[in-house]
Image 1 (cartoon, one colour):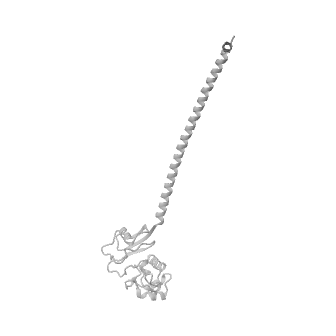
Image 2 (image 1 turned 90 degrees about the vertical axis):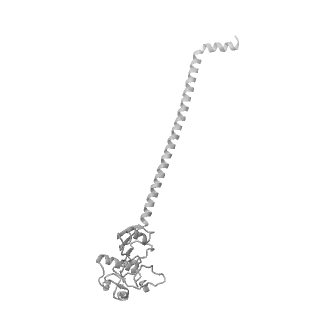
Image 3 (image 1 turned 30 degrees about the vertical axis):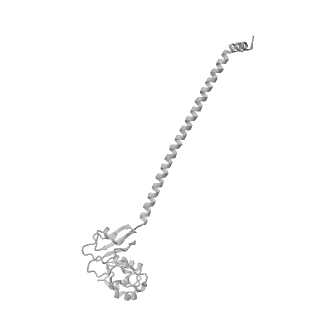
Amino acid sequence: MNFQTEIIEKIKNHKKYIAVFTFLLILLSIFSFSFLNKNEGETENQSFSKLLSDQEENKIDIHTEKSENSISNIEKQENSSIVVDMKGAVNKPGTYKVSSNLRVNDVVKLAGGMTKDADNKSVNLAQKITDEMVIYVASIGENINIVAEPSESINNSEKINASGNKININIADVNQLQTLSGVGAKKAQDIIDYREQNGNFKTIEELQNVNGFGAKSIEKLKENITVD
């Protein structure tokens, strides 16, 4: 019996074992293929989930940034807003909350413009407004000077009415009052506060009721002020 014949005989004798081994080998191949496909699917799902998660995080970050910018813009707008008091010959006198970069002319327009009997020379329409500023538009014939910016070259103790007329302390605004000798921003505001709380001054001497004004101060101001 040659070698090939011996091998054939052995295969015939162990045919059952070979069949079982072949069957197990096929099962192992199928299991390995399924396992590899499952891992690939899980990896793809994880990658897709991570992509969606990153997109959601980016959306949240963008939304948060926009919200913060909106809040910042609102705060800036609030900080740049001021309140001014519009009085006199305008159609809608009152207090106005406006932007700090406006000028007197802009506030006059907000107040409905000047009335027919308004003296448009009584205010400096080009003047920039400030917080707590009082803007007064006089009527034609009122004894009030034109609002003028005080010159830096004039000493505070030598300030006088720019037009040479007396200033009516019952209607003058902060800027007009500051053209008087020895009257700064605080004293000017004190005069207005007293006037609003107690009514118009009846006499010049009543000015002594305002903090910072004594008999000597009033004596120096008499020639430049009036209550009529």
